[in-house]
Every structure is written in C-alpha cells, then in structure tokens.
Image (cartoon, rainbow, N blue to C red):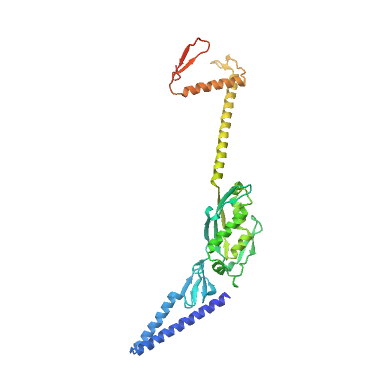
Length: 356
C-alpha cells in the first residue's frame, strides 16, 4: 500500500514539475516575444524552465537517511511515511508537507530519556511502609515497520521468543511512524509517563532495602512487562532490548536518611564498645598467662620464680592500675597533691613528669 502511494506521489510530483516547467518556459517565451525580444524569447524561455526546475528541486526534493523517516501529509491529512532515499514532494507547503510533532525529523535511532525524582510526581510507598523515589533511565526508539515483531521472554531470565505486538489502529493506520506522530502530541512525555507508571507498579512489590539492592532485577521486570510494552507499541515505540530501562537508585526522604544515619551511628558506637571490651579482656588474659609462666635465670635453666595462678579479679586490678599509670605518663607536667590515710595528714607531692 505504501509502495503504491509513494509511486502515486512521485508521479503527481513529476506531473506538477513538468507541467510547471512547461508553463514557465512557454509563458516566458510568449511574454518576452510580445515585449519585442524576438529570437531571444527562446533563450528567456529556457532560462525560465531551468529556474523552475532549480527552485522546485530546492524546496521539493528531499533526502532521507536510512536511520530516519518522514511522515508526509497531503492536503492536511496523513498520506505516507518516507524512508531512506531521495523523494520528491508535490508542491511542498501547498499539497504535500511534513507532519508536525516528529514527522519532519523522525528517527529510528535510540533516544535516552532521564527520569529524576522530580519527574515521579511523589514518593513511592514500598512494602513495610517505607517510602522513596526511584530514578531511572529509558532507552527507546520508534518501531521500524520492517521489523514489527518485538522479542518478549517467557520469563525474566528465559530465552527471548518472538511475540507479535501490534499498535492500536488510529484512523485506520497502524504504521508505527504514524502512531508516533499522531496518537499523542508530546510522545517523549508520554513515554516517560508510561515508564513511571510501570516502575511504580512493579517496585511497590519490594521493600525499600530490597529495591535498593535489586535494581537490576526490577529493571528487567519493567523491561519485559507486557502491559508496558503494549502501551508503548500503541504509540509506535519500543524499548532497547538490552538497556531499555535502567533503575539507577532509590532516593530516600531526608527524615529516613536521618533515621538511618542515627541507626548506623549507634551500630558503629556499639561495635566500638564491643571492640574495646574485647581488648580489655584480651589484656587481662595476657596478664594471667604471663603470671603463670616461670621466670628463668640468665642460663635459661635455673628457675628464679615459679609461675603463679592469678585470678581474673587480681589480673583485672593489675590491668586497671597499669592503665592509671599509663594515663599519668601521658599527662602534661603537673604536680599532684595526695594525702595518705592514717599518716597524720602528711602531704605527698608527686610530679608525674619526673621519670627518675
């Protein structure tokens, strides 16, 4: 059908070109003859004919690359879709013209659409009541009618199998390029809204922590969601099979961030105390083990002092005393005044900085 329409369009265009050329050429000859140009009227006629061809070629001849398409309207209604190659329009602007909203610069190339937290229109409530806002990327393209089948796997991880998805006919047309141009005025915005709806519907089946960890799994579920794909096909669009939807992150509300920071801080503090307590216990055990070892003379045979059994309480007292001495060692130079009990008020001065 499109081939017949294209042939008719080209035929009509050539009729207009040749007819217009004849009118311009003969009209110029007649006009200049009447003005007294004589034999030069033929030259003026040829000039008029060539000028007509040049002007028409400049405005009516168009080239479409293999990756692009153009939607042509004839007398204000859809006529056909032009693909790669050279094409001639019939009196462009009067009879033929490119459709607005993508018909004048349509492309089959992939288009990237970023969806931010501001685009989501509010937070998503996850399982368990937590909320957050997903941010993701869409990679979409107009369906090439030469390949009208879209691969849909039987499962998310299964082998893709061809499954026919047809665009909903509108005004008797189901050409994807037509659907892309005419079904909605702002197709990229429609793609974004359909993706947001699909992501919301699927991601609400997760709690917020699982969603943050399983962004790849969620992306695959959205990518192969039949309802979503059919809605896109209805406007002539498909997703890139490899990376059509990429869930980038889950933006959490500030209140949730603060609560989580508090929990993390408490956990970190608890781990610090645990590590500190483990260090104290190991130090006390080391004192008990060291006290149990005998002390040998320089010959390595004679026992100077036998090992002794030290209780946990005694070892702990030694450890605490040593801690106090270590702390005093680290203090800046100062004088500590101490009064010993049962000594009649004798005052003892201790200078911690004096290491003698």
